[in-house]
Amino acid sequence: MPEDTSAIIAQYRVTCICPTCPTYNECMRADDQRLFCVQGRSPTCTFDKKGCLCPTCPVARALQLKKSYYCIRGSEQEQK
Image (cartoon, rainbow, N blue to C red; front, top):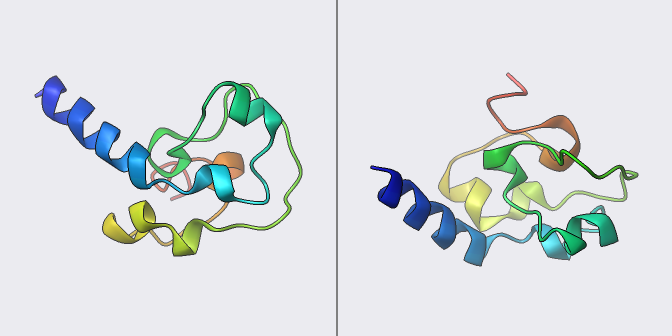
């Protein structure tokens, strides 16, 4: 089962649009952080809200996620 999870995460990383988001910053880029909607907020970076692309993300759509600013607020599960 872990191989399946790794493969799924790898696939989502390819379609993740976090790096194009206005809120995404150099700290997140340096650590190649993404998939906040699944993995939760950034554990190491601080930043300002500058806009959110989460509602337009193919990953969020595929997983039928409804929240936003996952990088700041945490995963869909954490925001419930």
